[in-house]
Amino acid sequence: MQRRQFVSLPAVQYAAEAAKAAEPELVPSWPVFDELEETGLKAVLRSGKWGRGNGGAVAEFENRYAALTATQHCLAVANGTSALLVALGVLGIGPGDEVIVPPYTFIATVNAVLRFHAVPVFADIDPLTLQMDPKRVAAQITPRTRAIIMVHMAGGVGELGQVIELGRKHNIPVIEDAAQAHLAEWQGRHVGGHATLGCFSFQASKNLNSGEGGAVVTNDAALAEKAFAFHNNSRGRTQPGTEFHYETSGANLRLTEFQGALLTAQMSRIDKQARRRSATAKKLDEIFSKVDGLSPYHVAKECTRNAYHLYMFHYDAAKFGGRSRGDFMKYLATKRIPVSGGYAPLQDEPFLKNTFETRGYQFAYGKNYFEKWRKRNDCPANRKACGEAVWFTQNLLLAEPELIQKIDKTVESWARIR
Image (cartoon, rainbow, N blue to C red):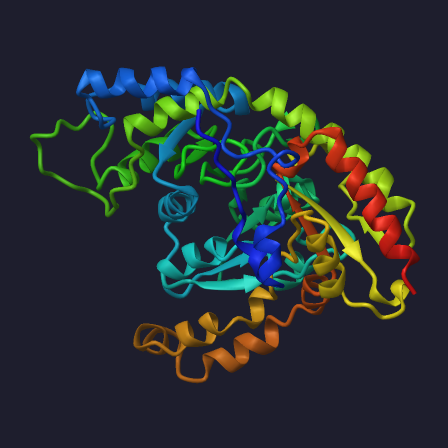
């Protein structure tokens, strides 16, 4: 099989050399595949049944993924953003509604809310975990709040129980955005099924990968049927293709049979890969914990399994004579260790102001809405964290011991520089 090298998009944001940092012999390529994927794809190709309407590969994957997540219903969709769109769509989110989201997340979490002309409201993060802070969630709830999206950032899980309890108290559904959290567990049970709906991504960088793809899981049979109709252009599960009658709006967000076959094959390796990532993360914890100024971010006590889509640690410039995080990342890049600075402060990005200034938003919310929103959505903990966090991507966690030893020596040498 031809070797493929995965490079995450954030890895190019601090220096050109970072894009060339990976040592092919030390950093595993991604995705991992063999004859199992090839056999599955050939079977779909030769069947002539390439769409889920008359094929069986997507349905087989859905059954397997529901079992993996210990949920009663799984719906495979086109991508992780589609999963969020389905979840928000079946909950009836629309103009005038507010949806609470964390600011430390990929833009898709917020874009999904904006697609329904609703308003994303940011609840700042806990600086020790980079996960959404339940106290900030509670402070942001208003009569307009119609949903809370809890993102399991990097494959860890924050204070999910507290957020779900807030949802119950205020009768607000909670969505688990578990795009980065395949095999993560909360209180010994896979994420996704703890809240009203769970959303996953199978995009090319993810720990479970079909190039693009996503899934929605739930234990609510009625929501599952609504979700199927929403992702199938308003057609219910039992509605024949020759019948053109619609009761709800929807979109075409279906997964192809080829991707269903890929995902079933990829699932055969996911547990073994996850165990290796966890073992590597433990070694990295030991490495960074012994260097003053570098520290792994905390994992919530009730997160009983971290999926480690990313390994995140904190860089304290003051401990290194003021040498910046950017200097540190460039140093790692010169040693051919791929690293990223991660997200920028999402609440400060111009797309939000530009969106609120569009005709539709001004009609729905008024011309001065953005200024009121901005004052309410300042997230100082997130802004600070975005300047101090450092990431390793999940494929580095699959590396051979030689790379981990190299990281150990490199951070020690960085600490000795004066």
